Length: 261
Ligand SMILES: O=P(O)(O)OC[C@@H](O)[C@@H](O)c1c[nH]c2ccccc12
Image (cartoon, rainbow, N blue to C red; front, side):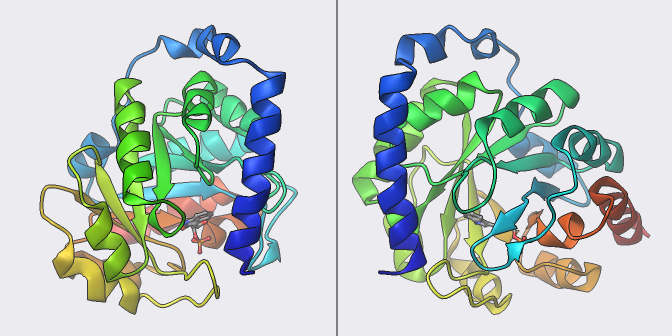
C-alpha cells in the first residue's frame, strides 16, 4: 500500500463518519453558502506573479514543517504580500489541518481560498463551500474519469472553481474536460514523494491553452518560477518554502518583491 492508498482508505472512513455527524442540510445552512464568488483564475490571469501560498503544518513527506504559525496571521500576511490565492490543507491525520483552519482563514482575509484535501465525495465539496472555500482540488491519481466529471460539475454548480492535479500524461489525458478551470502539475509524486520540476516542463505542451496552468510543489526560488513561466505556467503553488520560516507572510512578501524586480 502506498501512502496515497492509506490516505484514501482513511478518507473514506472519515467522510462516512462526518456524513453521520453533520447532515448535508446543516452544511447548506451555513451563512457562507451565499457569498460573492472570488475567482482564482481571474486573479492569476491579472497577476504578474501568480503565487498561490499554502498553509501547511506538516506533511507525510516532511513530517513537521511548522506548528508555531497560526492561520489568522498567515492569512493576513499572505494577503498583504499580494498572493493571488491561499491554499489551506484541511486533512487532519496526515497534514495536521482542519476545516476550522479554512474558516479562520476566511474570517481573516479576502483572498480566494483553496480547500486542499483529498476529495472523493460530493459531501466534501459542500463542506468546502460551507467553510469558505472558493476553489477545490481534485487529484487525478485517485479519481476515475467519471469521478472527475461528477465532482467537478457538482463544484461548478455551487459556484466553486476546480483545480485538477496531475502528475503524468495518462492522468492528464483522462482528465481534460470543460468543467475544470485550472490544471496543476504536481512536481511531487504522491506515491514516492520524489520531486522534480521537470514534471511541469514535460507536461506543459500537453495542457490545452484554455486552462490556466499551475506548477505545484518543490518551488523554492524565483529562478524556478522564471523558468517555468517560459513553459507557459501562470500560477505557482508554494507551501513549505514559506511555512518553514517564522513569518510565512513576510517570506511570501520578500519572494514576491524579488520576483517583480
Ligand atoms: O510545500 P510545497 O513543496 O511547496 O508544495 C505545496 C503543494 O503543492 C503541496 O502541498 C501539494 C500539492 N498537491 C497536493 C495534494 C495533497 C496534499 C498536498 C499537496
